[in-house]
Image: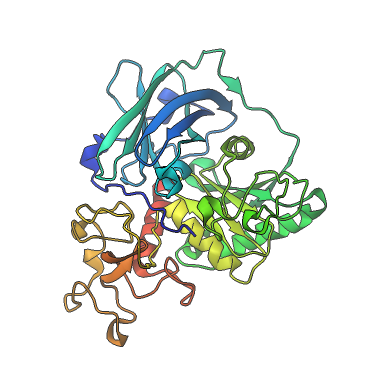
Length: 425
């Protein structure tokens, strides 16, 4: 549901200086716990400063144990974990942030703002250095902050045990071999918790109604934390409706009516940390159409409108698989056309070999005209990533474009499948 909010990233792994030819022995360096690093980003459209907030020890690492080095090249932010005084990379992870999206807005051109953000890493057995990076719009990776974490530091707070019921919605597979999703409710009162439970089942049914997820039903765990809100529904500033809810989700995020997100990162991460997770998904109890998804950060979707199933799967495409929106309209120029965007389902043709060139037939022209002949053909169709010109999508239509076809194109399917295997193999 993002509108004019894409930040550009590179798919070129060389610039990340990653050692990707070998993975790390988990038990040698990490415990079963998870370390949450809370920090702040301050800045505007052109500048950003980092500031550490706190470190929190959470009960269970929810990520993979066999694949600790992120070799996907996805995300506009990046962290690396090394033993103190060593160049060996023990863990790395790419992601995106709400702050990065805000930097593309008109508001960011005139004022400074601060955002609370978090990353999680496996809890180290010995002192480590954690380095934070961000990319410029020219895809240059820049170091922003470096901290040393001593696991024996008594200022590392234990995560609070919250008095909320936790339910297992789907799956009971080993955490290290599954994609673990935590569902959080917003705008569900204590009297509406049964409705939330039903909506959790609806989420699972929706997820496994689409390929390729329906082929990997044995690789997902879904858990939910039943935290009630004082008010039903969520905040809608444009309608002057302000609700007191558990996660403070709000439409009109960045003044885009259908973009429903939360700025309350700390509450969200504290609730999510009650269970092991790879992905956070907030279900908003409202009939208004909307939502949002940020790669490896969190997703939001509404549950009460007729497109709820499509919204759930579309936003998870952003949050889980790093897929870009494939629609376009006049007046946007978020992408630099001289570099290849990092998202797997859009291209500038600068490095098309790294995208879906292998899936395009020899007789399919590049770029590909939008007409009946190529209606169901994988090709290169101009108009994607909100831009009318210079950015291309794989097919005329796809769930990352409209909900007319009700399915992902083969390129998006492959990208999702690769991400499932990234977490589970």
